Image: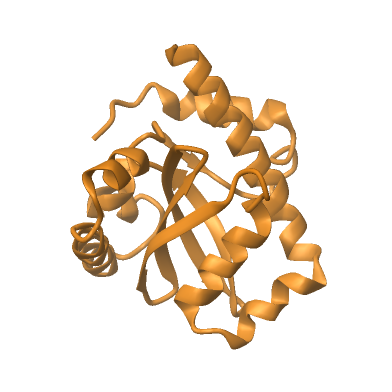
Length: 173
């Protein structure tokens, strides 16, 4: 069962990485520039992953400066995405689960300690309003996987497999 879940996470990760890379080159991806940040993040994630047979729910979205953590649920599973705003565009930077609620994990992504503390508190406050079922789904994504659409090989399944395996052995927080 655990192998099947890891395989499903790998498939999602490959989709995330490939779709995020395509969004950078797609003219419609820039349409979110005129929206408030939380709405732009939700719009961007839905544009990449929403499907008629598998709608993507994005909530909550917590923002601190040029960083945000967005929870997502799709087809009964979920996780969190750390997004970074560069040149006015939000991009998925890291995918993870409960680790993205902790300031110590956020600091490892390059965020300052004070910004990481503020964002972690915002995430915890926002998630306090969610149901136990929603929280359980956000916690399903195991490990932390960096998404770097600009790096050679990051778009293929082999690169995603290596990245996932490198972080999958870390214990859940």
